[in-house]
Amino acid sequence: MISRTDPAFADSMQHPFRTEQISGAYQGNYPIREIFRRFYPSYEAEHQGLDENKRKTARMIMACKTGELGYSLEVCPECGVFSIHNASCNNRSCPCCQHPQEKKWVAERKTELIEGIAYYHVIITLPEELNPLIRANEKLLLTLFFHCVNDTLLSLCEDKRYMGAKPAIMAVLHTWGQKLNYHPHIHVCLSGGGLTKQGSFVESRHKGFIIPQPVIAASFRGRFLCSLKKLYETGQLSFVFTPSLEAPEEWKEFIDALFDKQWMPFLKETFNGKGNAIEYLGRYSYRTAISNSRILSIENEQITFRYKDYKDGKMKTRTVSGSAFIGMFLQHILPKGFSRIRYAGYITNGAKKRSLKLIHKLRGSTYQGNPYRNMKMRELILTLFNRDIGCCPHCQCKEVLTLVNIRGKPGNAVPAHPSTPIAALS
Image (cartoon, rainbow, N blue to C red; front, top):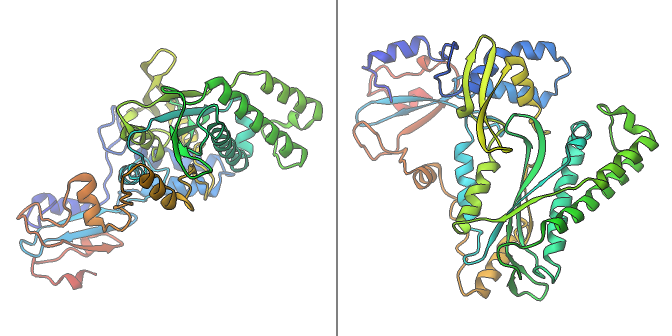
């Protein structure tokens, strides 16, 4: 919050959209934004065929929280103190503004969990041999990936050997590894209880694990590769990165090798209760390929970031050129309109409310619904972050601060005197 009488205010008006100087170890709050502002223009000039969706995402990241997308002016009617807040881009691939959405998603999903049952974390990964084919057919094959994961888990859970009921499935797609490499995999939160066809609620027969991993692997591999073969036979696949696979004999050899390969998913029961299952999944739901906190330095046209090597569990660093960093980041921008969070089982959008009411009734509890759905922004921020945006931090006035959404430079709209009518600012 900057007061009109604060000497820093005059300087902020002269340089309202000033960015941090990039040299040596980075000290700012949004290093990825600054990497894009510095290196993306030259990258775009060198890659004329760049997808428009990726261009738009890059522009949003560069403009996020700079004032270029507009800003809000908050004014206290009692003491006249005001502050300027630059607008966020709210692009789902921007690493600078996804935290509130993540917190809201976690809070909403917690209302859908069932007390007293186990929840399992499942990770299903596609073999790296498929990566070039997926990148050439991203929307088609990632959609197939989701369908095969959900169908596999639903059919196995409905098998009486394991549970004999329809579970809840929350699935989140990631296309990256810690080193920003292309690594498509899906994280799933799987309930250890479900609804039977007769309308009763039962829990899994095996405590500690729900389905043997080799069973999941074999079922998923068969479903995915059989569907992939049908796409090839109907001519729906593009082979822009793997032209040799268009030949039938090369394709057959490729598919046979994938059938012979072990596809081993990861599955474990989450610990510390049902809430931890969603907290864990929430960290994957709204995060992008790399967070700002992992950037260590921007120096001599080089970007250094840290990553966790899961082979030995140690933290390591990697240094790449600015252009290479931009390219690695952009390869994880999903196609326009593609949903990376999907639901199946008894929490599908069409059946969720009815199913949850039935389950709570069967278990002797009451379904409270989603209290966050109709919350206004002030109440939501207060609930999630314990911060009252309607209270002046200077004089503790409880009146709701006036928010004026404005485009252009903040200096054009700053009141000359605390008594300036608020209406004159809009």
